[in-house]
Length: 335
Image 1 (cartoon, rainbow, N blue to C red):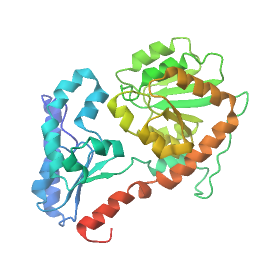
Image 2 (image 1 turned 135 degrees about the vertical axis):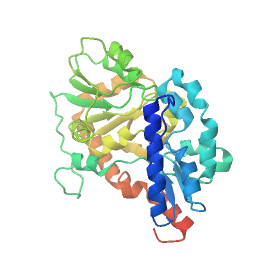
Image 3 (image 1 turned 90 degrees about the vertical axis):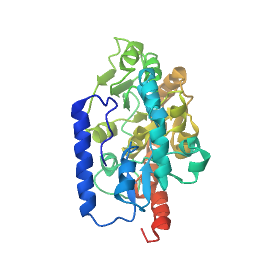
Image 4 (image 1 turned 180 degrees about the horizontal axis):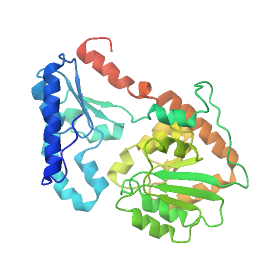
């Protein structure tokens, strides 16, 4: 995949890098055998037009995980006006695709009626490293989650990701400020627009909250697996209500109980294996954490149910099954 052009096209170094990537892609495409289908990766709004010219007549698939409006929601008000100028480019990219990949049914419904029939819902899922981190040894057999969390010990809770409006990190911060006196240890990982506001809501005297701005990708699955509960998203914006974030797939694969907002796509995906609170409700989130801290058996039940669900439905071969079926229909071959 060619990296997306910079959001600030006036930066010469990034423009040069993008031009070099395009030149390299063109050279490789001319040497390669003709493909049956071309998948244009994440944020490939411009790349799909290049693919259309390089591979005329070949079916194109666009990974439309995040729309321009979704990016604007994630980056905040300051970026919205600039990003919305790209809307016509995005619509042209969708029109050029034979298939459009989205991650939830709610995202599919946002597409214009003429494009919805060409959309395929492919959940994000989790990479093998997350399952490996949460599985004792390499045995893929029956699920067995040891109840490490016992009465008198700390409930270990983790949240990771960008501090964006979608994540609703200030909701988490407000909830954490109400947990004084409870055996709950929290790890907060990430950076972003609402990081300082979240810290301010937690307050300076929170010894059970550990703040980290970054964790290397190779280390993150094992760090998450060392916790009992993984927090999802709690924002109330349009995107927050129609997505299932990668962190809940990853947390489930790593063997954590998942506590997230009660939205249609997340409840539909997790069902009884998840624990839900109303979006934006810090009081409900604090109550849920306090209850879990007092009921180790419920934590163990949720962890076992979540990891069993993840091994069945969040592994790569399961999440891409709908795409593989549609690709087989398009190219007329066994995938």
